[in-house]
Length: 214
Image 1 (cartoon, rainbow, N blue to C red):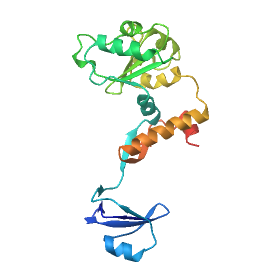
Image 2 (cartoon, rainbow, N blue to C red; image 1 turned 90 degrees about the vertical axis):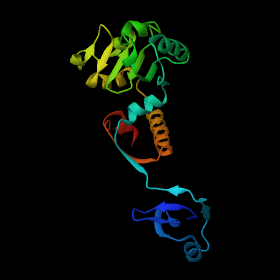
Image 3 (cartoon, helix red, strand yellow; image 1 turned 180 degrees about the horizontal axis):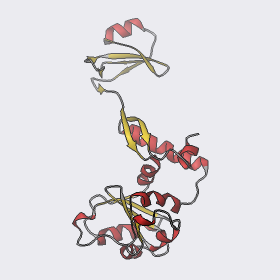
Image 4 (cartoon, helix red, strand yellow; image 1 turned 60 degrees about the vertical axis):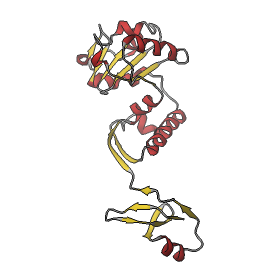
């Protein structure tokens, strides 16, 4: 296949066209020269678009990110009341509610377990702070956490989890079937590809993720 009439960054400048065979770039050069060299190949006209190598994300947690893609985005939420209202609406169609992107820096007081119990005291509610190192949970989610693990990072009175305790939240979710897990990972990879990310290093390669990648 020929990709022509583009701007391919090679690391040493730009070229107009590439010849691709079995998913590998075999040849780089000018549009006319490559069309002449490969007259029977399918041609894709890039209409002067820029083509650059894909990005590598060197620090990501694929399972956590996949949860975020299925969660309620709180970026722009300016108050506890707004978060509670968004949560109540979203919980109608969910057994477990996950919200992310909360920035409580400008709230009069931090988000707490009591606040999230107003969304529901029966279904688990999890709110990830925008930094990714802190999460707020309601009473139901708190009860589902494994006893004794990362205890020094959990404030049970206020439902605030920090650092190591945040990773325990995966255990709140029911065990997924291998097919469901694989589909979640595929959907996540498609999302990352749409952002130009073509390779990554993940921090949660053991356990469920390892099974889903088989």
